[in-house]
Image 1 (cartoon, one colour):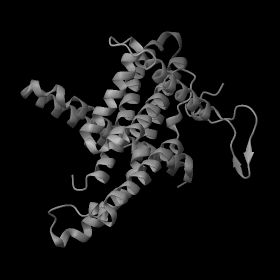
Image 2 (spheres, chains in turn brown, orange; image 1 turned 90 degrees about the horizontal axis):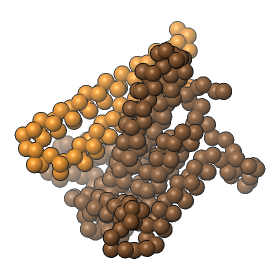
Image 3 (cartoon, each protein chain N blue to C red; image 1 turned 60 degrees about the vertical axis):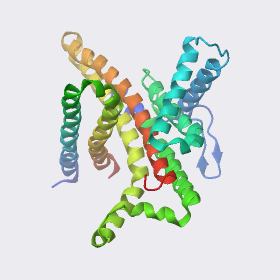
Image 4 (tube, chains in turn blue, brown; image 1 turned 120 degrees about the vertical axis):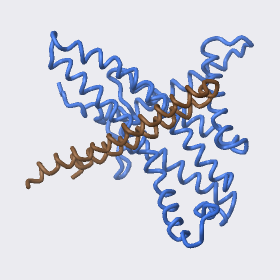
Amino acid sequence: MDLNPMHQFKVYKIGPEINLGNINLSFTNASLFMTISAILILSLLFLGTKKKSLIPSKIQLITEMSYTFVAKMINNTAGSGAKSFFPFVFTLFMFVLFCNMVGMLPYSFTVTSHIIVTFTLAAIIFIGVTIIGFIKHGIKYLELFIPKDVPIILLPLIIVIEIISYLARPVSLSVRLFANMMAGHTMLKVFGGFVISLGLLGGWLPLGFTVALIGLEILIAFLQAYVFAILTCIYLNDALNLHH
Amino acid sequence: MELEAAKMIGAGLASIALAGAGVGIGLIFGNYLSGAMRNPSAAAKQFPNLLLGFALAEATGLFGLVVALIILFAF
């Protein structure tokens, strides 16, 4: 057995190899767990909205809670003008949340612990928000880089800084989620290794620690999905309501 | 110096970034607590902001971890 704590992030193919030209399109364990998360979200929403009663059942309550949670988040951070982006933000939040949560199960695979997955999501958000900003404000969208009430002398410096921070958005957004997931899961496996190496006598201490860490990791899994969604809302707010 | 040894030292130095994250998280929770003690009625409303600040501060420390991993595995 492989005792390397990085072993859990290995992507391997399940079933036959599919090649489309030079691109390898094989079904991997990453795609399997992405499919599982998507099916879980769909079944939760489907079962929750099937029987719409005034006194909600437990599953309907969960569905309604997640709906109002995201709706409130968009309303508070991006204003009521961003209501038409609710389906996008809701999909994003639920997908990241379920990928993180499915990854917390033992022997499963965390899709969001791979930079390519999170960077793809962040790149979609970045490009989409930029296009929305230019459609809504035209060339005036470039005023985003000029903060209000800045002395003229400082402007060249400020504009460069603003442009760099704007271009760094997809990087920081994706690395934040990826690093949190990867660091957390590596830490869990390292402490799991301590349990084995310390044996029956001393292994109880790291075992207890691992239980506490799993609690922390579930909190982080939720928080990172929340942060990912709320930062999307903040970027949307910048694009929709220029100069706040 | 041998490259392998230099890599190890570099990766260890990169994890100093976590000190900054520790200071940041401590400041966030400490200031939230002192604010909540002064005005307990406003505390519950700021709890989401506390969690947001915590997650953002923790992520900056993890950027250092990413640098360490890049040094160790990408070169």
